[in-house]
Image 1 (cartoon, rainbow, N blue to C red):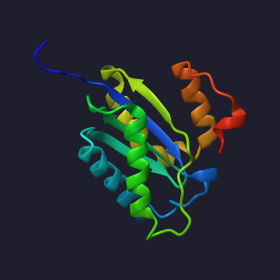
Image 2 (cartoon, rainbow, N blue to C red; image 1 turned 90 degrees about the horizontal axis):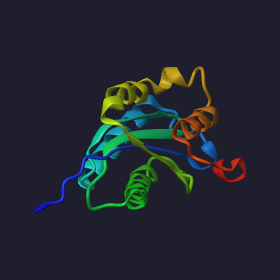
Image 3 (cartoon, rainbow, N blue to C red; image 1 turned 90 degrees about the vertical axis):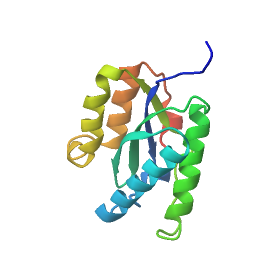
Image 4 (cartoon, rainbow, N blue to C red; image 1 turned 120 degrees about the horizontal axis):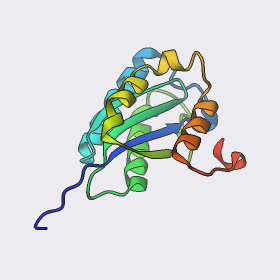
Length: 148
């Protein structure tokens, strides 16, 4: 094949360190989500939806054909930390993250899910949400190391 082509939808989830509610302002969340969308675009991994609540974010994007998942997440955290630090003292992202491949047939439903995070988290905690995602995607995990 003469050129490299890829279409990989990726659902990323990462939290503030110790799940501290640094992102409690709706305005700050909106600005951060827009900033993360721009950072995805700059990393050639355009976002389809960015959302979250006061202690974590969800990003649905198309993974660049030239980046690893780890490199993408590292850069998103690095760039967003630089943007957040002048606005919030001591803000940090947790070290780990969740990354899940998404079937094209599930993209629209996931966009809705990410868009409705505020409503969703009135019913389910972040920890329960992540446990559910791990089970859904068959990801083995050890509770001792997930909740940094």
